[in-house]
Amino acid sequence: MDPTQTPNNGRKKRKAPRFVVAGAVVAAMFASGLAVGSTMATWSSSAQFDGGIVVAGDLDVKAVAASWWDVSPDRNDAWDTVPGTDGSQLGHVISNIGTWRLAAGDKVAYAMQADVYAEGDNLVAELLVVRCPTTVPATISITYEVYLAGELIVPETAAPPFATQCATQPPRNEYHAIATLAAPTAGQADGLSDAELVTPVIQMSGSPERATVVLYINTSGSTPTNTIVPVGPVVIATEQLRTPGVGNFVRFP
Image (tube, rainbow, N blue to C red; front, top):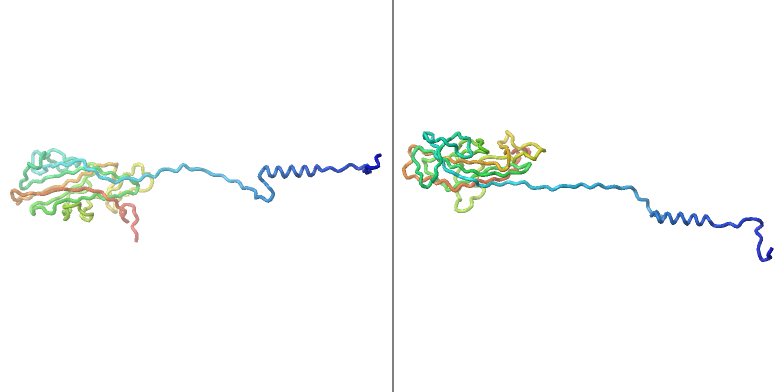
């Protein structure tokens, strides 16, 4: 035996495989992102919703046509229905009001047709009218009716006062409400209709829907000759209502 070598007394020399194993574990921990001293991540998930587009409704009124009619009840030629009405007051058309002449006892109708556009689940609107000029002869009375899709919704009644400011656009307080309408319920399945009996709100069946306002000029037997009866201009308008107690809007105590 080489005297320079130290005997091992028959024992095997220890090696360091445990250090190799430990090194492999640490490397695996770093590779998995779980370094010593780090926090273990919890599970998570997410879900996506497509959303949608919310579209505003519409409220508009557009003039369609206007015509003059002789609806004097004692006329034998009163056999035609005034456009937009239910035919309860028949008459014959006046083709040229500028050349036609009024006589005592006559009843003349001015039928104005307009399409009302209303779209909105909670939309309630007033149908308004303003008329100029400011006076008519004392022997003349003006009445009106309102129809919606040919159905009478406002029976013949005294017309609202004339506007006092006709030189320019009349202010809002000169307009008079003649009917209250609720937008159609088609496509608005949720919620209740705003047409109900507590407040007279009239349900529209479609949009647009034809509204007809008929102004009647009623003469008496004392109407003098050469009488001039100014009628227009007449403006029909719409305006949204959001008033408590109208339709299904809550009446606050």
